[in-house]
Length: 316
Image (cartoon, rainbow, N blue to C red):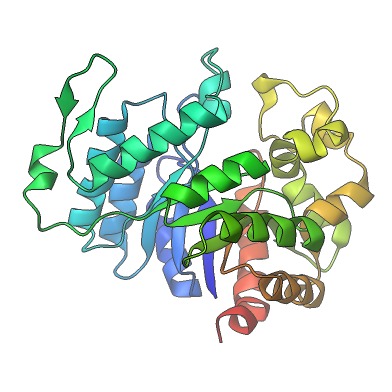
């Protein structure tokens, strides 16, 4: 079982977070790519690479529109070369990175075409552009850099299937309910009968006080639950407060919904639920440990508890 940590590109904090993630025993670290809310991920990922030795690194996630696909592929391949093969590339249709600049996410069919083009760029192959010309990342085509694996974050069945057809992995953004995760994993594996890794983004907090644990992840729960399967639970979402636990739409979430969608509670409760999720056909867990406005000290204490009391049971 791979267990990854998700974080935010906050200047002055990422290198320390990466060192901590490596010491705790996480497989890798993913940074959210949202240029209006956090700093540039590629700069911060480079700093994280210098600060660590084995930790795998990448965006969690970037999108097809805020950067040209060739720019994203070249950046990811550069991180791969400079980190001795530790790069990964999280990709999706886009969320706050697009909404913050007034752009809409691509349709599933357009996203699938973008994903196929991204993979071709990463392989160093020529890609046919919209104007009919061809483009390739020439320095990458010369060889010597292992291809960066792509993992697509997906919610709906059509996007899950499209991702499975082209990516090395699909990371479900469906919350923590076992039935939904089983259906998502089945959709991915039916779309691509050969092996594909299926992961899950999970809002996780460990605290002896369940109310305290809920508050740590409330803002990130509201962010992930805005998509069709659970959209009715998030009332009055405003992009100005995306990812914030203190936002009114996050505070309106019922505790019962947070308990179902997230994994928040004591170490024993969190451990038991994550083990059950792993047994439901999930190959890697991506732990989202707090909201954008969570107190860093509280997040750190939750992660300390997670690393000490939960992580060994998942990676043994």
